[in-house]
Length: 161
Image 1 (cartoon, helix red, strand yellow):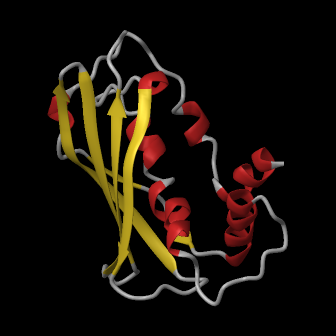
Image 2 (cartoon, rainbow, N blue to C red):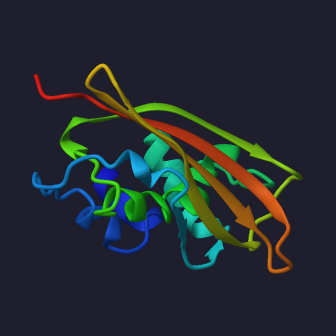
């Protein structure tokens, strides 16, 4: 059941392709500052319902008046993350990847049916004590270029045991 809902709120196949790791790639700390951009994302009420069903495990949860803040993971983070994960210039070992931290913040309340352009950049890229730390900051902008939504995610990659 969850798999069907996840397929509904994560559009495209890129996220699945990003899970394939090429062991010949190694982490490249020079990836700091790399940027990514994805297609426009609509804060669609139907995708929001599918997201709520996947997160709560319940179908038919009443619609909130505005998209939930955590829905930003769908329209802001998920369009960018597969680009980072599949970037050979970064070289992340995804089977060893751990999700460390995640936060969202907003310049104003967002509404359903708004369209945002997600962009991301690697704001931290380092290797310490055999672990890789990669921080991804994403911003969502309106058609006039105003940034209204932001996220920060920290990914950790464990070293070989």
